[in-house]
Length: 298
Image (cartoon, rainbow, N blue to C red):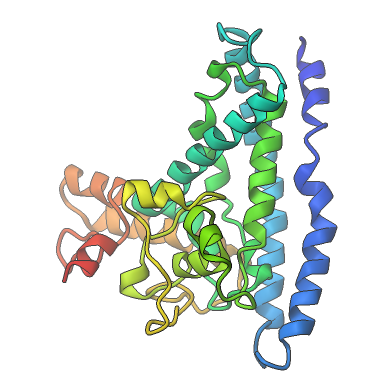
């Protein structure tokens, strides 16, 4: 298959573009239902930043997405399983788990590696929590995102199949960004990511920091020790531990990169410079350790 044919195949990945009108309609419904109970549920400037970040991340993602699709294609070509794993019903079920597992580690490391956090932090920068917040995607994380899926085409899954599953996973995640749903049935809360679980993830409360990285299945957090239940006694406080208090799109997208650069410059030892890049956010060579795990253990 030549380059043009590969690009043509990529154009069939329409899951997220198809869902955009559904997203916008759902936001309108959420606003209408919640406007009386939540007087400041949606804030115009905040919502515009979220939508703008969604558009900007989609634009920036174009070239990494094309590069990833090409890489997936060639990795699939050398897979010894490519003629065994096709698009059978059971292959979709297996891929669902593989994709969600890859997403968990991509998302978790976005919180535990500061360079990755700099690309992801815009998603957490809003002090509001609504469906519009789901659109506030990080721009920088688009660059390294697909590295976490490179192993899947080697297992025989074709690129378009993988991209379609990634898209369906993201569509599911959109709907967990709401305060209008309290708790779902216990069996569902035990297995799946829910609005309650994801409210914890977006909270800046110390006991909730860096928890619940799930895409669709919350079981990964429970297996790998990053799960925290939303408690009635601890209402989530949304935003960052230190909020940026700006609606400037450039500042929202880049503020943590600038902070990393500032810390790297003031560190004298190369080992400390590298720690500022690759350790979790909050580490300091000359100040208080404010990493999430450290704060929770105090």
